[in-house]
Image 1 (cartoon, helix red, strand yellow):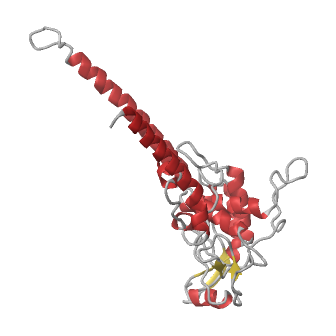
Image 2: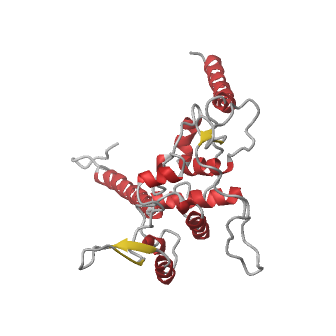
Image 3: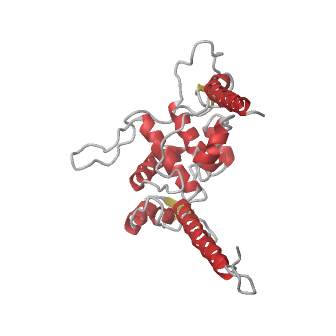
Length: 294
């Protein structure tokens, strides 16, 4: 292939990738709308959780989401561990005491109620799946513990190519945030009539969801700053970001430690590889007879 032909081929490939990137949202709109990518403090190889955001996210989850959803894989004590919301042990103990836990059996063989302890799991809102379905019109609210890892979607070509180099892996929180802000009432024109218990959501596959809009602007009051105002807006958009960040921490509570360990391993391999290279050059700088190796 001649040089001009090679350049034309490269230009054609670049133009095709650009056209595909522009056309992808249009193609996806008829089936599934791709959630817009958000900016997260924990993204990338050096990302870390925003402690204040995790604490705000827990407040929304506790006051809103926990009314229907369980978090069975998380213990209350996890809230004070490094790498998470990092509440103080005293705060966690006081929080645990606000829950009533059914325990037992006691010495007489009966179950009994007691105040919660930091070692307890988050109490489930319903005693069993049947009760949860009965209270939610037949729908079963999923457990939130690892939902941020379980919910994902295909970004399509050529986005997945760029994701390899940008290390994009935030499909879960992007989807959760989009789902919380994606409710439309009334639905867009041309939408079939919704059945009782159905709601329109732009980012839900099929656009129909059994969960009503869970939160409204100003519903959860955030802690105030020195000026008496919340440091972030109390809006659905901000609630969605804070909840999504907290759910990522629940799904991967050791995310910061994992990234820190990975960085240390890469630095070790870099230094070790450099030492091996220069040792090899030193050892083989001369032939066995003493003459130079080159």
